[in-house]
Length: 153
Image (cartoon, rainbow, N blue to C red; front, side, top):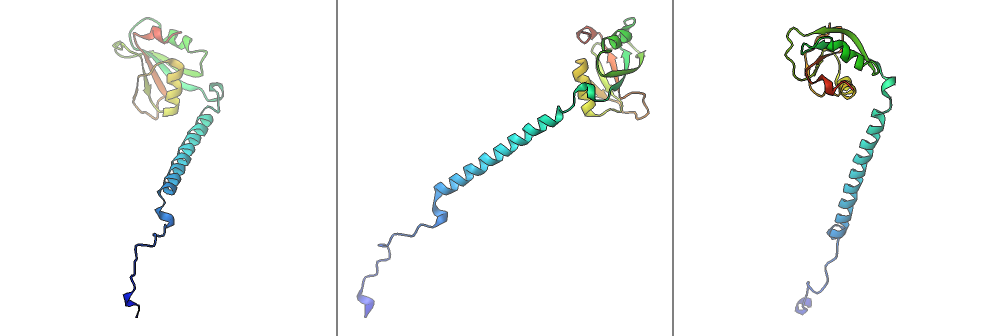
């Protein structure tokens, strides 16, 4: 019988399966990472183009109320004159009840965040707070503080 024959199961080299090739998996992983990185890059690049599609002159004017917050005579009118060449519609001028503002600030009344960013860019005033009021006459209030000279150019 065949029982006396030596069966050497280890003499035959093992077959390499397609999934046992590590270099192939590393190549696939590298291609996936590269592809997803390129997709993120091009998506963010194309978003940047659509945001700057319109110039400031083509967008609607931002309605603001300018308030003198530091008590200097005619400061609100001077500040409004400094903004006259920008895409800002000054609805009214006035004074705050107390002249206590050292720093100028934008008060969001019913405007949105994109308009706030536009207004910050046009005026240079970065500080802002929110006091929403849908019946207010303007989208924003600008309270001019003692630091007004840095914003009047």
